[in-house]
Image (spheres, rainbow over the protein chains, first blue to last red):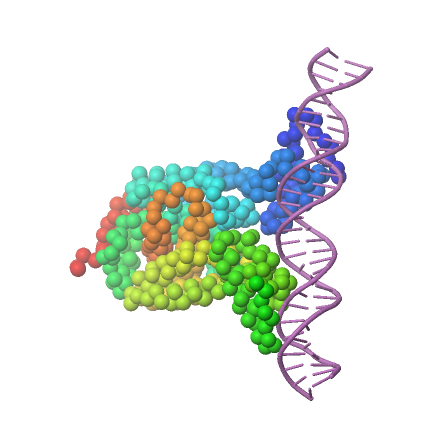
Length: 222
Length: 222
DNA sequence: GGATCAGGTTGACATCGTCAACCTGACGGT
DNA sequence: ACCGTCAGGTTGACGATGTCAACCTGATCC
């Protein structure tokens, strides 16, 4: 199983190999504790300290492995298109959630542990761009950065709870849960920003008023 | 620094002492990696394996330490009262967020790592109870369990991002962020559940319609 | 006054991340 | 043809950590 030494100039080949087996190991075990430098090195057919030739330490390796997933996420969000900006927002939110749930370990390592990297920046920017479109189209009002972080929080909360609390008695199917959280975030952001902090109808009158208001939002013409 | 041995029948005293110093250590360092059995034992004035007399291992100790915080959280949510059920929902959501941000390490350990315990069950039940009140009062519609999980997701997402990504360029003050996420969750849940999955006005007409609809929700009488 | 047993301690083991020192074989210059 | 050089590794060790089996000890009861 011993790996043959690379020729001069090809040292980076080992780096790729290490990343590959580390990703494998992480996917197999589902936890970064099981990602030992010794296990990674052994599977790559190489001695343990060789990892240090390409990564400054264990944390650096883990980060490098997980960061690869985020490029894919940005790509899959970019692919989630729709002509209507508000619909595109929902599509991208769902793409985000779908990807996170498909790569739970990487998502957890990068976004559910304290860190100062900005792994999600690219994805957030894609979200932000779509929120801007919605503001221009008049369906959302307010500062796009603030609106986007609030919606991000909702979707992140949804997937991170699903990842971290598999034992919780979730009352709806995962797909429905994600979809409904996305809808809640979208409509909630649109409505909350249009209402004053105080002076909204008191609860007994708010229920019927919401019924009536929502009827006017439905397209009866088609 | 050596602790005097407890008398027969008082063995549980050490358990309390261990919990106390472990909590101290966790609060000081902010990370459970620094919570070594050796450090805990040393600070308690006791030998390392003594911890095993009261906890089955490191994970059990960490869980026991963090679980103590949740009882306090449930209490502080119970204290967040308001006559109006919809307002009470917001108060409790904010109490939840405030507590989580005040005990970030415990929150992270229990809710942001994979686990099968149901740490948050008691808090969720308090949330659920208030959601039920809102449904009875007519301001929310739908199945309370589903509504509550969606709102929980939003608030959890908000605090867990704040805890895990302190380096992110948050565009609003933490208090405002929390408040606005809570508003988004409340109004979003109320509205999204009243709208059909399809057949909502297309974006160009949705903006003005939302403006008009939200005007009807404002209390102009006072 | 000796047995008992709760409440610990001692010493060791395997595993981990990390590092300094060493090895080795391909390649360029002469 | 030979020899230095240097990229690309390896060896062996260190200290820290979770965990466990075996041992100790002093209060209490008959």
